[in-house]
Length: 541
Image 1 (cartoon, rainbow, N blue to C red):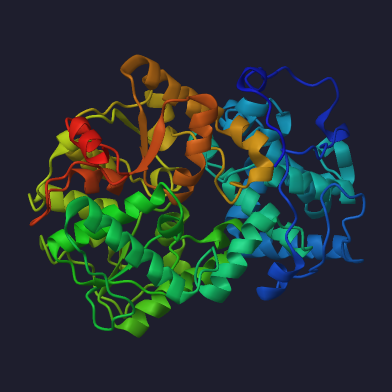
Image 2 (image 1 turned 180 degrees about the vertical axis):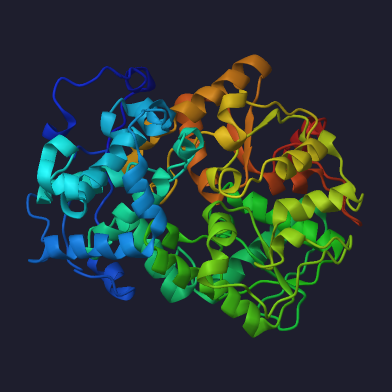
C-alpha cells in the first residue's frame, strides 16, 4: 500500500487552471493514484480478452496488435446499441456546471477529474472518427487521434470516477457521466485493461457465487458463528435455514455483511429481526452475493451476475426476494433488471406476511429492500423497540449514491433511524439525498493501493461529517451500503477521528426488544449499553 500524505498535506488542494492545455498533459502513474492491473487468471475465468501479466507503470502494456481497430469497433458497436451513449457524446456544450460537483476534482484539483473533461477524453476520440466536423477540422473541432497514450489516460481517469452520478444532478442536459465511464471501462476491457480489485470479485462471483470466493460450507459456518454471537448478547438463539425449498422469501445480502466488520453487526441485526417477526426465509449458499461488480465491468457482465439470484429463487421455489443493505445491487435491480433479466414473472408480487403490505414498487423485480421492509413493520407497530439503547450514539446518515440517486431511496432509512435512535442529525442539505457526496471509493475502487485518491475523493463527504461532528457531537455515521461500510471507517479515521460507521440494521438490532431475551447489557459490538457500563465492568472483574 502506498504511503498516504498527512491530512494537513492532502487537504491543500490547488484548483487553479493548469499552465498547459489538457491535450498536452498526460497522467503520472504514481503510487496511490492508480489501481493494480487485472490478473490474467481472472480475465480467463470470465472469458475476457487479452489475459496477460502487466503493470500500469510499464511502458509496454502488451496491447493486442490490432488494439486500435478493436477499440474503434467497440466504440461503434456501443454507439449503435446504446442511444444514450451517442446522445451524451453529441449534446454536451461544455458549460462546466458539473465541474465542481465531482468529489475527485474537489479532492485532487486535477482538471481531468471534472466530469465535463473526463467525458471529453472519450468524446474527443468520438469526434475524430465518428463525426464529419471532427474528421475535417480535427483539433479545431475538439478531435484527437487515438494513441496508446490515450488508452493509458482512459485507464487512469475512468478508474478515478466512482460512477456516483452526482454530476448528472446538476447537468442542464441530464448527461450521465457514469454511463460514459461505463463505456470507457467496457472499451478498456476489450483490450484486457481492467483492474484486479474489480475483476477478482467478478471472477469469484462467477465461479463461487460471491465476491470473496467463499465456498458454500464456509458461508454457512460464518452465519452460524453469528447465531452464537446473537445468543451471547441476547440469550435468544435464532434459527436460519439454507437452500430450503419452499420458503416464502429468499434473502440475499452482500458477502461483505457476512465476512467484514462493521457489516457483520448489520448481519446480526437482520437475523434478529427475521427471528422476532417469524419470517419464513432462507439463505442460498450458491447465490451468496447481493453485490454486482459487473456494474463496474460491462453491461453484459452485470446481466450475467444479476441472473444468479433469480436462477436460485426459481430453483428454491420461493415467492419473492428480500435484499440487504447494498448499493450497486440495488442500482442494478432498480435501473437495469427489467431490460437485462426480467421481468421475473415466475415470482409473486412481494407482500409482507407480517403487515399485509403489497410492495407495488417491486411488482416487476419481485425484490424488496430491507429498509423499506423494516420501515413498513415499524409503521404498523410490529416491532418492540427501545431507542434508548442507542443513546450513546449520536447519528448522522450517509445517503449511499446507488440507493439515493440510483433509486430515489431517501425517506425509508431515515424513518427507521428515527425509530431506533433518539439522537439523529442531518448533514448540510447540499450534501445529502440526491446531492449526496460519494464515499470516494465506489465502483470497485476500494482497494488499498489507491488509498491516496480514496482519501482525496472522500474529502467532501468527510467535510460534511466533520460539520455535524463539531456542531452536534455526531460520533456515528450510518449507511445502507456494504462498500460504504468497508471504506468509510478508514476515511473517518483519516479525516474525522472520533466518528465510527454502522449499518442501519445494526442499530435496529440494538434497539430491538426480543421475546424471551435476557437482560441486555451490551450492544452487538459487545460495548456496554447506556447505563450498563458498571455492570459490564463488574462482569469483567
